[in-house]
Figure 1 (cartoon, rainbow, N blue to C red):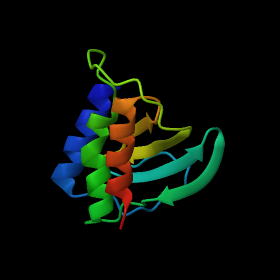
Figure 2 (spheres, rainbow, N blue to C red):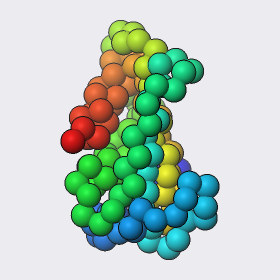
Figure 3 (cartoon, one colour):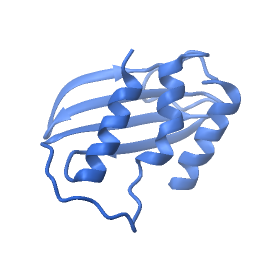
Figure 4 (cartoon, rainbow, N blue to C red):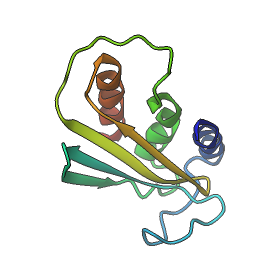
Length: 124
């Protein structure tokens, strides 16, 4: 999965958010298409959805795609054991025609840092 995310991020950087955001959710991705949705949850309750759509040249989309490889936990990382709350975000969609999914929480210091980076990337 990490390879798929990394390749997808590279493909997107080369095509500057290629894809036009067309295509309904649940439809098969087209080659080169990029579209992302970020679901914001408070525990199991969804509180907001950010549809990036990813039209060509969208800076928010480009920031999130570039960040995707960093959202995966490193098995060797050492994290502070600080609980930041039940909030979490799930990024789902396609990058360069390949499916992607990443989830960040606030369960420890490393996850809180990833959550904050993703939160900053999707702000206007």
